[in-house]
Image (cartoon, rainbow, N blue to C red):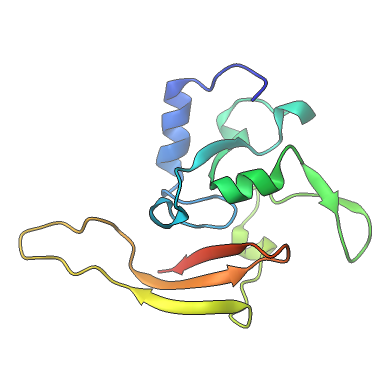
Length: 142
């Protein structure tokens, strides 16, 4: 990060609004294998500001893959197009999850002993989805 540190109250608000999942691939914190980071959606190097509307929580893999980019070449039109903006666009309108790409699917459940809260809130179908660049992204469908 080239600009000033993100103020703690702003950082806490981004985390609170994230539902503990990556804004790009929707992987929850509990299965990413690393803590999520705060990402400038429009990079500071491209004029993005450190404000709530330009910040989101991202897993390490998505954050590294996106890097300091705000746009990329569309393979269908060969034109540059803006990258997905999680605060301005709906994920389901921008991406399509095809279970034909699913490499492995399994159910995650956590039994609750009587009188005890669950240790994690993961429950549902988890699919490992192979992205076009070869990365495997866990996707939880609750």
